[in-house]
Image 1: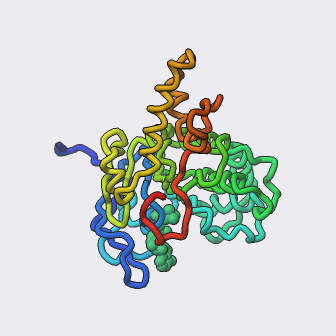
Image 2: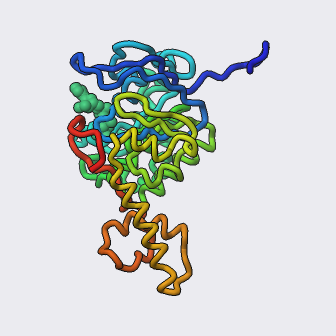
Image 3: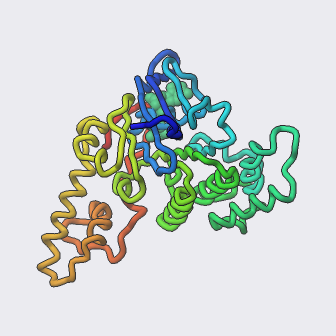
Length: 314
Ligand SMILES: Nc1ncnc2c1ncn2[C@@H]1O[C@H](COP(=O)(O)OP(=O)(O)OP(=O)(O)O)[C@@H](O)[C@H]1O
Ligand SMILES: [Mg+2]
């Protein structure tokens, strides 16, 4: 309850009654949502659920048919310099002839305004951001000549150079290996430690609990939103993925089988490793021994397919 004199901090992002339509066909319906400042929040849902659209609506890249969006209590336009965006990989033109450093320097434009060109201070900042994501040696490389994971790191560096208060990231872990994912997660955790808010579209259900304080489950409508331990439940996931949760069911079954298997081997039961390795076991023949190392990157991400074709996991 607030008392007179209390200063209310507005949510980092607030959506009220938001409906977004493409060609008059709504793809997000009646979304009411408030994201508190300083948290790392996952947006979870199947392909075509409207996750990217939700982020684009916050950024004003797609218009609201009804409802409104606020960023730190104001319109996005008045807060845009405080917002960093990492777009979904597929939506970027990677053939555009710019170097990694150029891309990161773009992150500093917002503060410079249109008239000033980036100078030595901005270059230093951009190189520092590239270093932070382990890409300093690729500064002069054309982005078309980088691997997918390296391109992803460059876009993260651009967001870092922006020094934003709110980051919107659309699948920053898509198509990256385990080492790159760990590197990116560590950067995101640092940003959170500094009080930044991160709104991250994420597909890998196995890592949600480890990464996010809060989740937003969406499939055209908002299914649920709140602290991960309260909201990331089997029932909510079933509702989000249209009642078909084959991969989760298989993962649970694999963990159970693996734990049954351990006593017969006399092995020390490495519980956390067993759980982390479980998804990988889905790829192994029944009865095969578990992998020596948890294969983090092999977790069963929802299969990619053209948006809108299907709203359920395979
Ligand atoms: N520019 C557009 N014009 C028309 N329809 C679009 C456009 N962009 C997206 N859509 C449609 O809107 C719906 C939501 O798309 P969106 O890209 O937000 O989904 P998503 O949850 O991000 O999916 P994915 O996990 O595949 O990235 C889909 O049915 C998609 O086909
Ligand atoms: Mg998307």
